[in-house]
Image 1 (cartoon, rainbow, N blue to C red):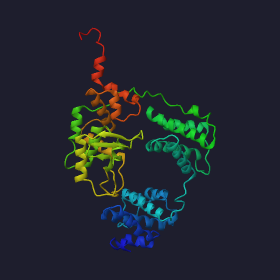
Image 2: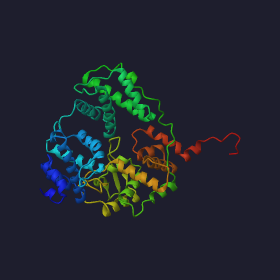
Image 3: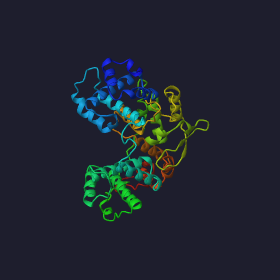
Image 4: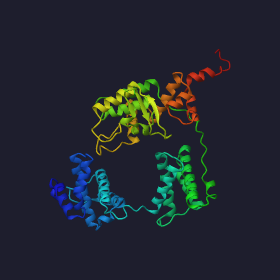
Length: 416
């Protein structure tokens, strides 16, 4: 077996004697196709050997393997492991390697019920389809709603998940109280919105009566335009952009991402959604299509943003079949990056500059304030930030110092 020829005899023996032996070649090919480094593949195979030794001793068959079995191995065996020292013990490496193993076993069709969703998951799939087709909600919104409703159904159904029914009033009230007790009003509103949406789905799909439950799902008071938008000063923005030193890993990618936030006011999800086909270099435009409004917008491409993206594509972007502009620099190389990567890049830049901020969205607020400071109108801000409703942009009137100074009345008793 080629996959075992170059590893230590102890883990090799664990694999040969275990039930996972037939799947090791496919497992190695799976990692190679995703361009994992040879050293990483070797470590992951060692981790699978450790797992194979444990399931053989615990008399677990391949069909019984699942996330729960893996979690039991990580939580119960690894902390007290007395296996031979040649077997790896890193929890992080084991978690990653076994996640890939389950994918390989699932593709091979050997896991029991691997393609049979539970009653709860089947219900959530239908709820997600309802939100997508009947309500037109974005993927990010649907994911949050499904997560909230999943927790409710798991608590309501308990160990018995053979059928689904609406929760009793006291169960729903208890769930809401526990869920929102430490949340901000805006987050608590999201919980209430998800639960109301699910109740209406039950009415349309099953004909359930929810009149006795809806009064329990009250949204907390939240004045959307009450807070002051937090922005960076011009000096802070300059300091942030100058913090991308040549010795930083993936510096060109990080800098180009931040330029998209600073120059275009993009959301983090819109940054990672940009593709090579979205930029027209000849006329200097960029197309934004992965946004909350689910519309396509074409914006002028600033020189600073375009040159940062071009330098990244020419000098640092790895060869990949992925059409996204910003791609992973480690295996799996062809997998798209997530919005959290952009947020992490901005957070690390704040920390290097010793700025007291954490959120990438502040750069979007900063662009709105910059437009208003240059004499722009709220309508122009709404157009650039791609707000579907002009009311969404009204909060930025609070940072329009030029406009506010024109309408401000003199302070009583002052000479102004």
